[in-house]
Image (cartoon, rainbow, N blue to C red; front, side, top):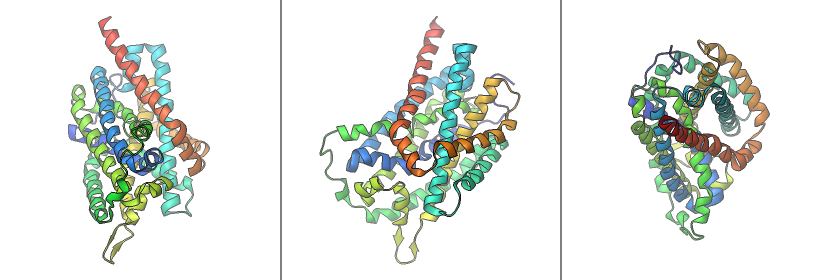
Length: 367
């Protein structure tokens, strides 16, 4: 087994790679991004998301160039290769800690969403345990297995999304978009950091899958296509939130997309569809969590030079459970973290550090 190559030999097609990028881009953003944007941009939230999509494609270009420089290595193996063992190990540990924190926030969010919106009597830990068990099973089955499952689940997600859009359009009010840019571009720009970092920069976990992609030197096309489609879905979601809910309700609710689903009504027989549509969000959050768990486990395996990583899954799950309870004890603390420091954390690890690695890889080659 070559350095940086995962222990299972599963291969990803271009279509599978693109679908995983789409699902990871949407992830938890479909739940939390509308609220984060509305706090800053109000009725111009859709403009913020549109600008974010353009910048997100720029992030995708950077990751595509980095993947090309990696030449079939994973992110961790690439870092050790270009920085050397000592400096490379320090940077790898930074990435591992980031992946762990990212996993903790995502699973906390999932359990809090389920317990506050759907199952209030269920303990957070019970939701977390059930969720992480399914993640571990998928991880142990290997990359090819969960990539094929994504091909089956993605059409279901799209069907549910189109269903939501079509049945909410009659409730859309153009007046909710006005006034456009009444206070200039400043409010629109103030929401950009969160809307670029959370959906797009966190895609750095996808670079751990580069060794499995058949055309690892040609990741740019499926990567940008995935970001474009995922970003467009987020844009439509934010636009719908503004049109149907209005900026005030959008800002005051933790999960405005869930409120959208509650507003679906067709005649007097098709109502209260939020429980069914929750499946749509579970798909995206699950796949983003799975990819992060994959990144954590494989990073530790490659950093320590282990022969296989399945033995790490249960101990890691236990540590992540404890971390989830300690770091985000309730939804108020979680939302405060997301609104204040998380975007800066994302920007440092997912934008600044990869940009420096990319520049260093070019200088190192010339030297």
